[in-house]
Every structure is written in structure tokens, then in C-alpha cells.
Length: 345
Image (cartoon, rainbow, N blue to C red; front, side, top):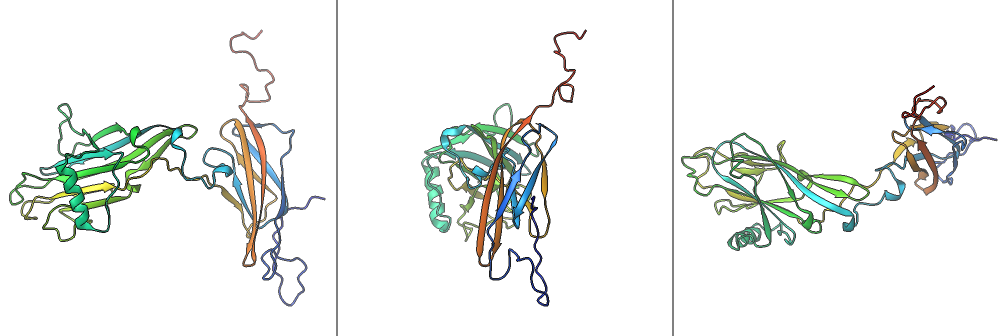
């Protein structure tokens, strides 16, 4: 006899409980459910597939088996570097008002800044400059063909595949030669991302703003080397841009601004773990669930059933293979279909 998934009710103390609740204070009931799918049915991309449930379970989590929703990858947050075919840095830089420069480098060997000792980090960056940025690759943003022009956004891409195992990015915001008493110190808006092409994963994008960044002001007049998000004359991460090098007008500062933004070195193999969809909880009754696959293919569908209360938890996993076919040319069962190269009689 078919037994549907039931929501048991907590009965008033005045009436004996006829149905024990899965979340009853002193009892945890093991999950016991089943999922069925009629094997004789044929499913096409774009048509709903219906899964029928039997048994007792409080919560159901559904993994369709499509990319990004595979149960086997629920705890995977990185991939093997051997799967990475290429890595690209994308930058959009818009110079605003004033005069100044913005230099950009990347490294595959930098070990990182302290992040909690401003003077030590100033010394590290000063040493790198004095050493000609040894170990860093300079990135050309402007050239003879594309000269830096105020308010014109420069969009560039760079191959950083060699740095996938240890990637660091550095920006130098410099106003050497600008008279702070008479000239405006330049403002830059920077946005960007890193994309990797990985076997079996396609393109994986990471926004520049999600990278861990440390800003270091090199001016001795700045008591706090890490000063940021402080309006004109500061490096800001609190605006609509990934990085906002906010310049200032004449006489706003008594010194020419100079500051670095350096990302924490990291491996470029991070991926988002695959996720499932909660289709049932204790508040909803469910005998079946329908899902539509957009593309043909063979999918491993997974249902995770859970009962949880303060006593403990119980879990049961059900997997099944579902084959989704491409729809026939006539949109039906294939009857009347003709070879497009052979005229119909």
C-alpha cells in the first residue's frame, strides 16, 4: 500500500498522541523514504519530470545533477591545478581629474604583506621599488596608441596562467612631480576580475573586489599607513568601484600622495561548491516533485532526506539516473519525421 510522505502533527496534551512526531521532544525517528520514477516514461528537454515519494521524512534537499548542482561536489571548494587551461586578468581603469600615474604588476612568487604592521609593510613596498619590482611582471595599461585620457575607461586583458598557483596583484598610485599646492592629484576608478578556463568547469570568474587587498600609504605624513575609506586623498573600497583611488584638489594635501594596493597571494583554483534546493520542510506536505531539465543528457539526481531535532539527526540519500532526450524534429514522438536531405513523397 502506497504510503505518502506525511507531516505529523503535535497533538494537544488533552488528547493522546495518535501519531508520533519526528521532532517529538524525546524521540528522533530515522528517515525512511523512497523515490520512484516510472522507467517506461520518456522525457524530453523542456518537459517536467515528476518524482514520486513514499515514506516519512521532514526535510528533502534536491540535487538535479546538472552543472553546479551535483551531490558529489557538495563539499568541493577547489579544483586540481592540472585542470586549469588558462587564466586571464581583466581590468577596467578610468582616470578621472588631475595628474598622476597608476602602475600595475602581478607576481607568482610574492609571499604577502604582514597586514597588521603598517611600518613593516611600508618597508617591504619601499624595498620592492628600490629593487625594481624584482619578481613582479609589469602590465601595460596605456601605450602610444591608447594614451591616458581623463574619463576614458581603458579595458585590458592579461594572460596570468603562469601565476595560477600563487597570484598577487599590485597597484601603485603615485603623484611624483605634482605640486600639491597648485595641482590636482589624480583620481582613478578600477574594476576587474580574474577568469579561469578549467577542464569540465568552463569559465570560472572571480571579481576583483572578492580578493583580499591591503592598502599601504607611503607618505610619512600619514600616521596610519593603512588609512583608507577617508574621502579625498585616500584609497577607498567603500564605493561602487572595486578600488577607488580618490585624488584631491590643490592645497587639500600638503604632500604628493603615494599608495599601494596589494592583494594577498592566493591559488586561482577556487570554485563554488555545488548546491541543492530545499523542496520540502516540516511545514509543507509533498507526495511528488516536478523538475524541468533544459538540456538533453544523462543526470544523476540525488534526494537527501533529513530528520533533525535536539536529540540528533538522521539522513538518507536516494540517487537515480535520469536520461533527458532531445525533442524530435516534429516536436512529437518522432512519427512523420523525415530526413531533411530527402524530399517527402
